[in-house]
Length: 618
Image (cartoon, rainbow, N blue to C red; front, side, top):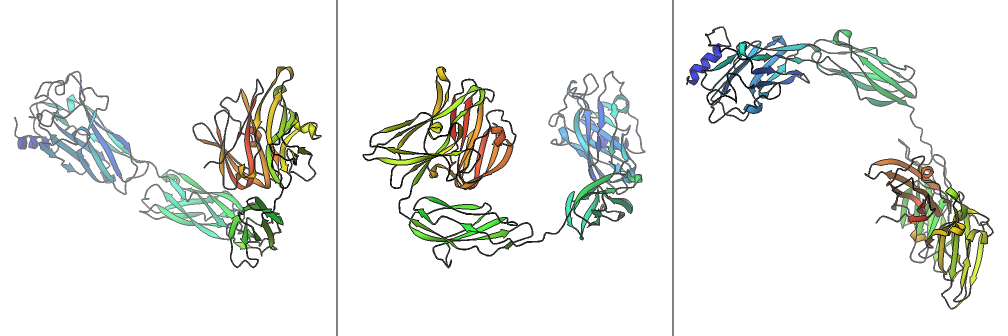
């Protein structure tokens, strides 16, 4: 075995003018290879991998007996132009990174650097993968720090010197440049690019703001960047700006002329590649904050303990929000509540008798504004325990033709379980309109223990056909009858298919702040879905969010309807044109008011209906 010092001297001498004679083995048909990678610089520091491929059938390799493995190598790389490189290191990497060398050196000259490694075969066998795909196994890497003279758009050649060789541990067997495949590499320095930061900005008409023209790297000399505006009637810029040598950016002013949006372009000289970058600048006219008018507040004179009532008002021009104060003191010395809302109504419920006072202000809180009107007139509501007529709700009733030859009817049975006569009335509210005092009604009076039947409710009320909702109103102090309401498709001699509908109370409705959900049918070819809404006295506003079965949001829309309003459109109409594909969920977030919201699913073949009421998610 050649002593390490002597072997090192022989390897180093291969790098410099003092050359010793080497015994060169006769090349075999197969050749091992040494490869220096080709990379694109992404900054001033560039990492270039170096590979050795161990091919079978060569003098040295994993397929050779002990003592004839590749356990040492000398790799010398020349780089040009040398002026483009500030510094370079050549170190182990890849399969040699975790090994302990018996000898290691990295001599360098201007324009070249070498790496000399020797490893003990018995304790630090280099784990080459025989016949690995090109370029083989990484054994080292070159880390370059580029100098300021490394010109964008140029390349630095990386050439493997003929002093490169592979050896066994003892240095008695060698594969030199003549018996190796040497693959040179390069560092490609991309041409300069330029960007304008920020990409999107705004400026008030008559004002100036600053943007930044920034190149992808420092410029070698003072560089003029050309500037232009796509529409000088909206935004103007100077014709050019200069980036100083050794820097990469320069600020410039953009001046707003008139409302609109223009594109600003910055371009480098053609000598540097002529790259350009753009940014959008929006010009706005400063907002004038108008003070909203005083709103007119209305509310019921009386309300019952435990029941919900609404305070309402007409929208005020220029108002974005409203503040309603509640107090038991007519001077508002202490507030029981103060709410900021965007709707034009708000609901209250109290569990004890008292007189409550309300006042309202309109607020303009558009961006840059925060001004409010004076207070409205004070409105008082006497909350008392005096019995008042009670209302239950049948959210949907009808006697109307449906799709595919269906005809839907509503049958109502009323049973009086009490020992005295009970009385009240049923009021029908047609679709697409708020209920009024003149809506069709039917008065009932049921003796003790008796039952009353309306086989088809609407014709019994004098309404030939239609669809809507119904209020079941018990007379003051009277209990409600037990009801059996059946909505069904009357197929004549083929029989009926239908569902039972429960009477509901105002507390069953979705309230402001509630969130609920409906499920779309899994097969939208076999089933159709309508979505129904019946509002209460204060109307409703809500947001619909549709998610596919994976939970991805595919549609969002908002809806609002007036008081005692009914609508039951197809799902696509309710969802502003979104067509269900099956298994979606439809989330409902109530933002003001209250309503019953349901999904009516009908079998397209049998016309069998079903209904799901959106329940509050706890």
